[in-house]
Image (tube, rainbow, N blue to C red; front, side, top):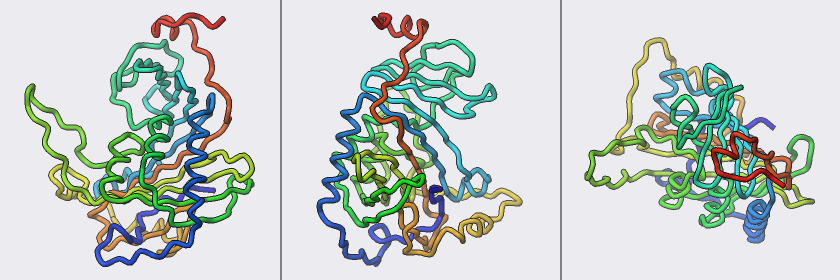
Length: 310
């Protein structure tokens, strides 16, 4: 199943005067979501593959709103190995997280100590951190709005869709659970300067949990967030770039369903003023449940101060 990457947004909770449809989903489905999240946290390990795409007025103008931000990780309770695909001119970048320490290396290179940066010093993009994300989802006030039976890679799956809006949605983005594509997020302060309060943002997040009905394992987490006034000061960034036709991208999404339809667990929506919104699609697929990450090599163990496995 290909992730739905559409600009369309049929806003219920986030749009003025919108009507929230009455949910007919059994309450037990939220308990099922919590069950699979706890099972993932208790696992000795699993792999994940993520894809991220941001649709916004500024990305359309710069022609950068394609599938970007592909990564693969192998998580375990004490370490996580991540591969950022085509992260630099050298190709893939590997990043190792172990407790509060981080190592990085370019393809074929040696591990070096880094913190929040790749081996070449570039700031790391959002990286899916299972322990952070799964715990944040367990704490979030998830509103179950849809339930369906589908397939994933020719396997039957149960799909439970939840929504979060307002301050709890901001919490999900700011916790690191999901990528926050707000423009101008990093701010530099002089020593001793106070951090200003964040601008009030209209945010809604929709999350589709794809669950194996037999094993109760989470196979996929497909999400989309809609953020209005997602820039510094709450204003909208207007970008003018010659030759960019904003209608081209909308035409590309015409085959992705009508407003109100459910595609890949998410509801197709239509925005009244799409240039005022940042729409981030984030799709994570899980595999190799129960398999711990590979052992650390000698160089990584030396940098991390760990003994060789016995």
